[in-house]
Image (tube, rainbow, N blue to C red; front, top):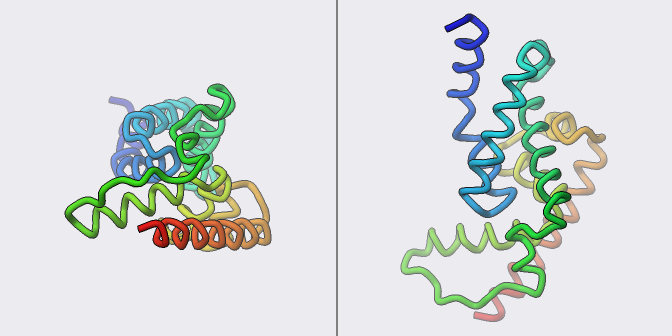
Length: 167
């Protein structure tokens, strides 16, 4: 194995789990998330010298992941699982455990958001990135991160209030 391969392998092993989690939260489907991460890692490997030399290699790879997700939306004309929530949530009998129900509710609420707002929430609040780091990954200003987060939190709040009132 070459030095490049070993270096990339180490980078990938340290980040694959978090990339899978982020991809799942972006698309709501473990199989599609796995495909997104695989495509992301292939591109990261192809461009490894650039990725490695970037100021923030993690942000570079997350940006690839977001671009892959956007590309899937465009190619499939938004036919991803998010479309099943366009008319509102389906009422389903709650799971036996509160934790699973909360997670399902959170995922359902996230999938209602437009991709950019969803990515902002995932990066800022679930991955704990700063506004500056989030802006770097999304390729926008910190002000845009603030406004996207504010809109997304408002939408999430409204969605969760609506679904709670239905129960």
